[in-house]
Image (cartoon, rainbow, N blue to C red; front, side, top):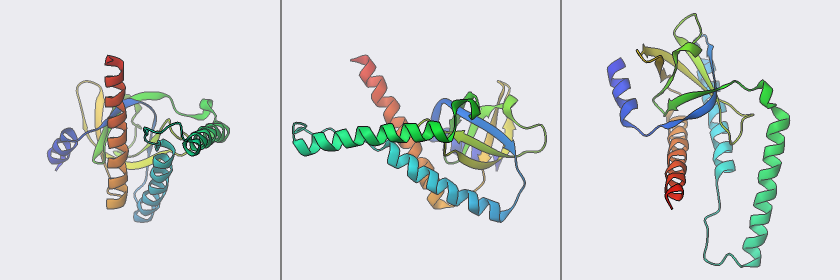
Length: 183
């Protein structure tokens, strides 16, 4: 089973970035998994709405589009202000290199709690650091390079699909940034 999960994880596109990450010990419980699933769905929907950008159109000179762009900029500024008020940067966990998708994550083994293999991976994404993703996981394997592979507990198809969409948006943004830097 572990090898099948590792293979499935390795074959999928991942978010591969320096993110604010905390790994906490967790107890098992079906009700807590259901609650985490609902909270994560809400968080992922909020992050998707924040990250959503208007497609550039050919008629940017339109007064309506200019007004929408102005309102979009104001809302983005407001979201940034609220995020800073809700969770100051000093209260956020340190950044660590993490690679994750809907199957699991590769994380620094040094961040794992000392007790048990059941953890809750808390990721504070830059789009909305005050709403962390809380992904229950099991430590599946510790690698020789100081990393550990965590397999996520199933939170339902909707949460897995939302994580896949987040991963896809992140990957698409990184590809666009790479192309832009080449020109």
